[in-house]
Image 1 (cartoon, rainbow, N blue to C red):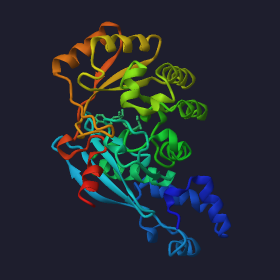
Image 2 (image 1 turned 45 degrees about the vertical axis):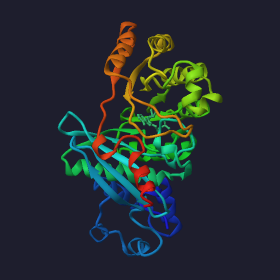
Image 3 (image 1 turned 90 degrees about the vertical axis):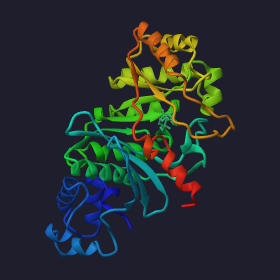
Length: 352
Ligand code: SAH
């Protein structure tokens, strides 16, 4: 049975017409649904008898629920969201410095097939793609947390589980709903799609003209190092990926982020910092240095460690010395394992 998050305005209009119900109800219904962050009282909406009756077996309001919710000392809340169609994913709510804003992190797939050696989300492979509606559901859960916290979701990143470019139709359809003024009403600029570097996907997303920001999980500036930790590098090499990202930024007129998870003795040398700076020339992008969150042994059996603070600072200094805008990602919610695929992994280990 479809849920309201499965529709955009025109598909709900078509559905209602198909049921011989006035199509104009679609706008009222979806408007009220999103205005109330997914919490609506059907009986107070004056939907008409026929449409009201559809909610007894043909159409449902929601298709997911919060399975677990853990709050960290810094205000980060990690949700495990279960879907009626089966399976669960993580989404993370992060209050911002500004008192009225928060950031959200959502998933695009259940599990992940990319096999990055330092990432927990990929340890059990990919179970399935999320539907557009299931992606929108995560945004609604996070928006409701924000509302209760007197904030609003002001930025949303696809940096949870999964590779968005391998589920691009649904990711694009979800973004359409999340950005639609009558629905999620979050501007394109506030949305970031993060990819391991699927060149065909980056090219397609550029054609969609959604003008969302792109984050590229580079993690190494040379093919030899990158192939060891990011298996997809065997298919798409660093030069190709960087070209696709640069072209994306040009076509969409957006600023990209290069994500770089520093791993001691693997990708944190001065030489690699210089190589990364070389790659950044002429590219409107920032580097985001991510502290590694220990996940135990990776798929290859290797274990990784965070570099020393001294090493991290030296790496950043080289980049900044070469005029590369460089940020450190704050680690959020690590006392509740909100970082990168950890909660779900814990539940799997517990047999949940
Ligand atoms: N598949 C997409 C989106 C999910 S990963 C992508 O690769 O971008 C989102 C970000 O989390 C990526 O930059 C990823 O490299 C990072 N990440 C994954 N595991 C991590 C870990 N253990 N510690 C720190 N960052 C990690």
